[in-house]
Length: 315
Image 1 (cartoon, rainbow, N blue to C red):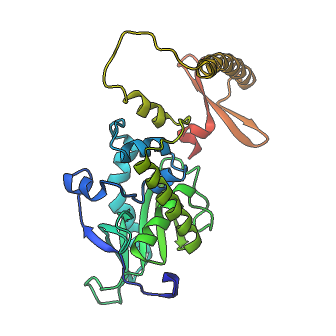
Image 2 (tube, rainbow, N blue to C red; image 1 turned 135 degrees about the vertical axis):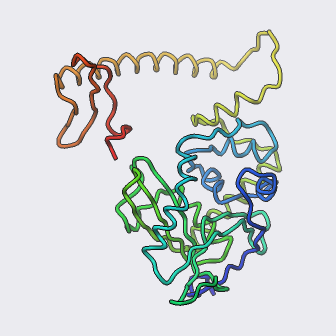
Image 3 (cartoon, rainbow, N blue to C red; image 1 turned 30 degrees about the vertical axis):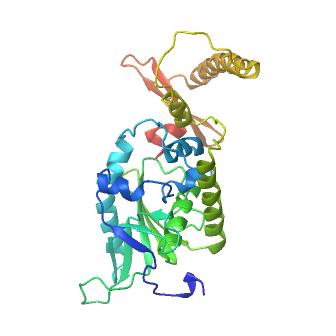
């Protein structure tokens, strides 16, 4: 029988504990040849933050660039409780409580740390029930470009869908609710149902990935920035010598340099054309869609031109 057949399925995974992120105990619970919910998107090549190449080096015990706290990560952490409280206000009769770190009851390498477990809470009862029936995942986003309208079936970015599918598979729960705060004021909700087929695809990919780690089969180098950062931290010394490299590697590098130069020249020309059309205006619009915006200097001349999709104005 599938977990989706159980309306109230107490988590069937194994609770490892409640750990503070970044502590030794937290790192230990996530260490070794395990795959966590935040890593599974990297395994299947869908993570915007970590490449398969970088994750392979991490799991192989090799050097990776140190984690850097960004403002987005910091504020996402600071706002988790208020956004979860908003979901709680919108769903009387359900209690969202901290979930802790879990592993699958049989596959010890399959780990997850959901944001909250959701428990049914009849009116007048204030103790946490024994059975949880869903998960709550809390997210914040500065612009919301990747999120669909609230409640949309396809409104959740694919890498987050991978994350919660993994979490549900680990804990044995049938659905995940999303509470998302966009631009600091746009609150949205979504629901993802467990899908055994999708979960199996992720499990099979994880098994193959861990086999490649054990066998020393390194993934190919890709164009992700964190892959470049991982390559940068591999050398453990410096020798002032010449090193012969393959001709195709040299040609690829030189061609990319030439193309980058040409692209920069074309971008400068394109920006000049847009600014020429803008004149004293602020926003460039094409067929009703905002393309770029101009920031003026005090005297009215142009300080800069930026693409609209990456600006705060896009929110």
